[in-house]
Length: 122
Image (cartoon, rainbow, N blue to C red; front, side, top):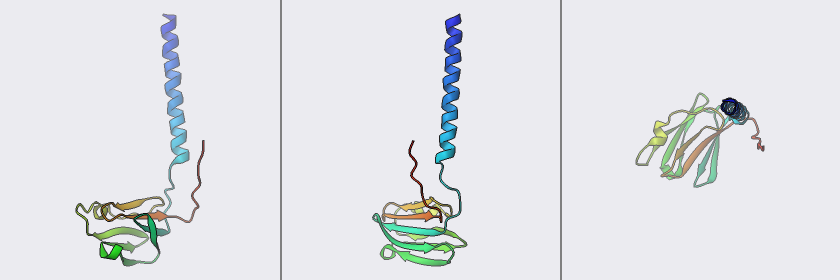
């Protein structure tokens, strides 16, 4: 009986330790939830444009394959010439580190904030 109680106690301590470690990592490594200031557009891995989210407008990208709209500090893929239109259906984004991806057209829109990203090493 004593060995069973020790095993159960050790299991509880192990589970509690893992839960605490997971919560600490979640809090430390979570991305910023601040509103971003710039939409960064990449086509085929190359940055082709940076648009401030403070300036409303419609921008045609990638030789007319994609059109983005910036309005009220948010950006969305307004139109895309791709088969599934998942990038269009994703809707508006405005927070730092959010992104919209159009895989068929190799377009990625990422929101950057004023803060500088920090590399984190354990």
